[in-house]
Image (cartoon, rainbow, N blue to C red; front, side, top):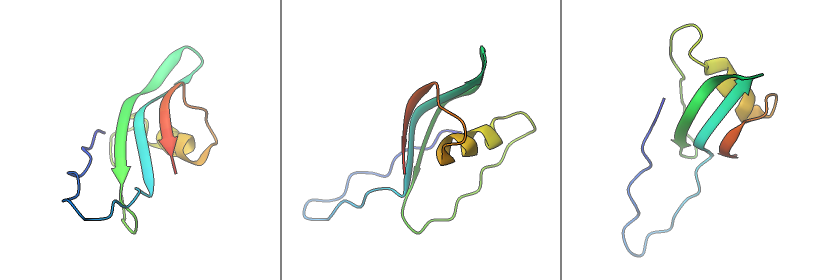
Length: 78
């Protein structure tokens, strides 16, 4: 699940901080890494769906975002 940030604003435009930003986030259960380097930028007032097969790390990613599971690397900005 990798997304690319929006292009830089044109000169004179204000920059709006994302509502959510994950930068190279990793997470593990014990020694088993289950989330591998996720990058995600969610603009304000956006609706986002996280899709993937069983075991892809969707629930763990959400737990990292809301603070119920500690990331083992990267940055989460809410």
